Structure formats: structure tokens, C-alpha cells
Amino acid sequence: MWDRRPRLSSLGPGMPGPTQPWAAVPHGRNGFWSPREAHSRLAQDNPLRGRSRTAEMGATPTNSRAAVDEIPDGLWGKCTKCGAMLYQRELERDLRVCKHCGFHFRLGARDRIAITADPDTFVEHDAALAPANPLAFPQYEEKLARDQGKTGLLDAFIWGECALAGVPVAMGASDSGFLMASMGSVLGEKVARAMEFAAASRVPLILFSASGGARMQEGIISLMQMAKTAAAVHRLGEARVPYLSVLTDPTTAGVWASYASLGDVIAAEPGARVLFAGPRVIEQSLKIKLAGGAHTSEFQLEHGMVDLIVPRREMRATLERLLGYLWSPPAVSGAEPP
Image 1 (tube, rainbow, N blue to C red):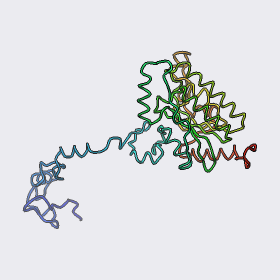
Image 2 (image 1 turned 135 degrees about the vertical axis):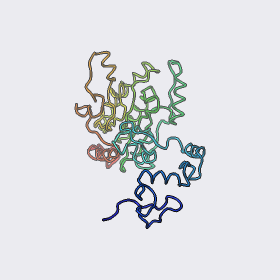
Image 3 (image 1 turned 120 degrees about the vertical axis):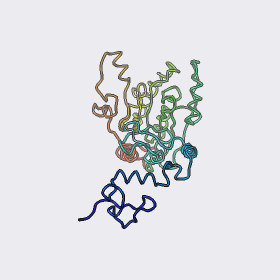
Image 4 (image 1 turned 180 degrees about the vertical axis):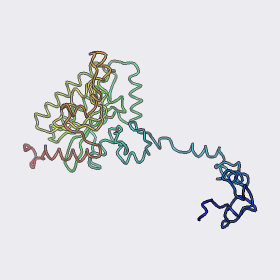
């Protein structure tokens, strides 16, 4: 019968070689080593006894700590939804979508346009338009300077002309990193100018919305942008030019109540927060408790406020397909669209 007991080959001087079974060892009870005795003897005769793995590898704890400290900050991050650790470069290649649960991280305005428009076709308009402080609101200018330095933008919205699958379009995007893309005088003016350009040039308009609402530092001036942008949408409709509205996280309050909800087709990213007022505000003011998930794009789709939900990887192809349904560029300049 095969002896299943292990062999001793490295218990120190005088121990049996690799071909000698435990039975040949003249030690231990009844001529055998028990497992406990074998481990004890191995620990006593081990030349590395008492040395850490770090010392065995020729490094000191201090050097090891220094090596860890040399790892760049921001190399890894955690998914907001599932908690999985994500390598940042891989996350960027995945368009900032978690590969484990599909959570869509927020995108900056320039990154949004870069992954949607044809390469090297975007030409920005009104890049020098910057906000002022008409109400002399305290610390407003400091906050503007802070976010201008952080995002590289003068305000929370950029727009311009570009091509999508070879079709000339006007395209704009909000940046939630700039005062949560709140709508002030500059954002409203840029949105209105984008719509007027699309109507005059007869090119479809695509807007990516994200906003925390009206910009409180500009008071009534910010609220006036709701009426101004809604009127611009109406003129765009009279010109028979399609307007595609894409909702991203978060699209709320005055932006959702004006131009973001007035597109010919309204698409949204999965899991985006789309609402006018937050659940807590509604519960405190109206004494109504909302159903779970009432602030999501999926809830808006179920109740007819959104036409379709599109994952980020499929957004460009979906917009291209929608343009094919809604628009055919006039063959002759100035000709009416079909």
C-alpha cells in the first residue's frame, strides 16, 4: 500500500534525502515524525527563521513603504455603485463606465463632445463668453475662478459646429464640474445661440444636458433663461430643424423644466438622475413620499417623459441612426428639408 505520509528533504543536517521515506527517520515516536514535530523541527532548522518576507527579498520596511508612496495618486478608484476597484486608465478606455455593474460616471463637456463628434471636426463658438456678477453676490467671483481653473472652461456650457458620421450638426454639452452646471446668464445665452445657429444654418442640434438647476448667485436673471431657451426651441421647431436632447446625470430643476425636456427626441443615460425637485424637498413641502427610484431616467421612461435610454457606448451610433430618421441634408443650398 502506498505510504501517503510526506517525505522529509529539508529539515536540516542529518535529515533523510528526497528519496527516503519518513519511516527511515530514526526520530520521533515509533520511528515517525508527527506533523507537529516536523513543523517544529523545520522552524528550528530554517536559516530564514525570524526574518520577514521583506528582509528575505533584500528590502527594509522603510524602503518598502517608500516604494508604495511612489505610486501616483488617482491611479485606482472605487465604483460609486458596486464598490469595485477600477484602474483609472482602463476606466477611461471604457468611456468612464464601470465594467462590473455598468455605472456611468460623469463626463466633462469636452470629453463628451470628443467621444461623440467625428474626430477633429468640432469648432467651438462663443468660447470667450464669460459670466459676470451682476448682483454682487458674495464669494461668487471666487467660486467662478475656482471652477474655471479646475475645468478649463469660462462657464458650464460649450457649443459649436461639428460633424457626426459626416452629417454637419451643432452640438453642445454641459459640464457638471463647473458649479454643478447651474444655469446662469451665460449658459442660457449659449444654449439660445446654439439653437439660433442651428435654425439659421439648417443643421440638426444635439445638446447634452446636466445641471443642478438655476444659478442662485444670479437670482431672477438665471430664472429668465428658462423662458429664453424655451422660446429658442420653439423657433427651432418652426424652422423644421431636429433637436435631439440627451439627459445625463444629473439633469434637474430649471434645465429639466425648460430646454432639456423640449427635444424632438429625448434620450437619457442609464441611471441618470432626472427630476425637478429632490425627494426630500417634495416630502417636506407637499407631504408626499415618492416611490423608490422616482428620480431616475428609468422612471421617466416608464412614465413617458423620456423616449429611450441609451448606454454611453451606444450613444454615438444611436444619435447617428436618429439623424437618419429625422433629417436629410438639402441637396441644394436653401432647399426645404423633406
